[in-house]
Image (cartoon, rainbow, N blue to C red; front, side, top):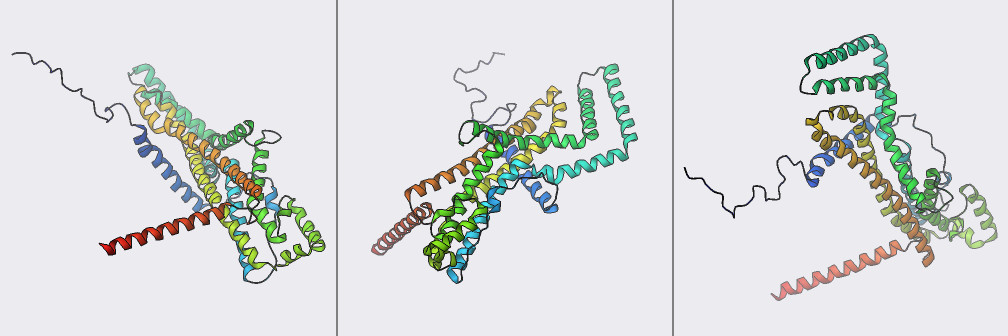
Length: 407
């Protein structure tokens, strides 16, 4: 039979954009099929765990910062003062919640605290109650696996993987609390390291790179910008109390009331309409920063919990990787998600610090401009832009109506 020669103009077998059958998933498909489902499942798990144990005690103690000593309240009757009182309290609640979520992220691993630690304690109690059968069974299975591998000399390394898994799980059962603590440590250490690097790069000027001091200074400036300044204007008509220590503000206010009649008028509530305007702009000003910090804290908490679960899964994944046939699966389903969780946690911590710095910087710029509406040029600019957009929309509708009538 004559040989069939291939044509020179024939196309290669794989010229399409699709990956080859054995080349593994692309970055986009891996994000869609691995990392995003991992994060979604972690979020659901966190919600379930938090619903089952919302008020568990025993979290690591945290010091009292200055914003926690602030007394947020104004005097005076009438609708304007009542509205201003509710608005400034809402502003303080949102600002405090933003700071607290960031402090929790640096202080404790939420999933480990709510579920991992109690589960580890339960495993330790169960191990103590069944110590003898567990030790005897583990020794028997391990000796059997080693004897099988030495005597039969199989080509597969499945027996080595099984022996390593048995050893690792034995260590985890023997030291459950230490294993849980080791898995929870990276989720807290990574945000701390991000803060330390940011302080070392002089992104936050201060006396030193200690992470606790950096976060406390950031929180103090954030609170001063969004709560202390508008609260001072509600109480005195000026930002004179904004930079004072929280414990000394009551005495300073009383002194100012005795010496300055205008301050006394503001303190007793004779400027209800002006107070309502100041409090409204304060709420509008803090809203975008509070929402941004809340969203970043939620993403960072999910990444922290996913990192915790993947660190525990490493007790199984690392021994399985000894088998060369399963290394690709280990990389796809464990190592890459682990790196993704670390990157997401780093990004969340860094963006949270940037939002805090941005809020303080924008407020400082507003103070330099000298607009006294709650120290906020942002709400005024937002109202102006919204008005221009509304006028443009009405003009377009009018043009469209005229064109439809003429046709």
